[in-house]
Length: 189
Image 1 (cartoon, rainbow, N blue to C red):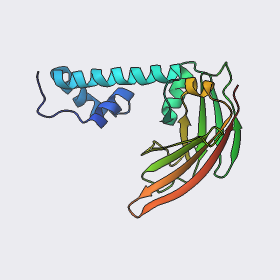
Image 2: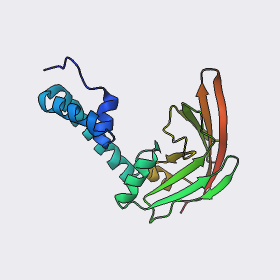
Image 3: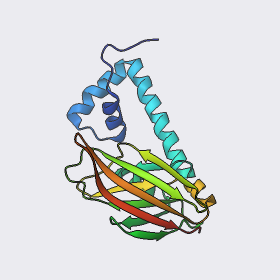
Image 4: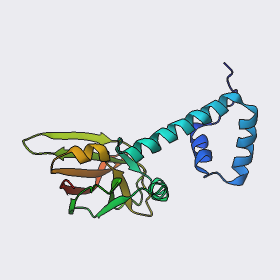
């Protein structure tokens, strides 16, 4: 198996795959890919992963934090998306109807100056059953002032009425700083 003396960084491959490189950076990267089987295989692996993520989102089998660009891609692909904007402290009544492919929470937050954002999730489905998890280093756009999440639609369709809470935290060298708490009262569609 061939290796590469100067493999292309994964971040650069991702930017290339997404079309986010400028011409001056894209031309030498493409030249390298034409000459390097190792890096070409890595790009093919990345493309396969991207295809798998897209399929999982389309099928509603994955929950994830989204970038605005990925959300726009979902819409361009014809996905029917129900969106719920939420300000800190709000309780939002929400649902996922049969005609919806996905639901997206648009959590508004003061993100200026944040370099990393984590999200604490909890779901209370009644009867004292509470699930909790943390998503580290979620994507966010400080200018837009929001973080986007989509739950796994297939799992959400099977859930009874429940309450989902999300807390956004700015993670800094000095510790964690709360950015906002959001509550979603979900009713089955």
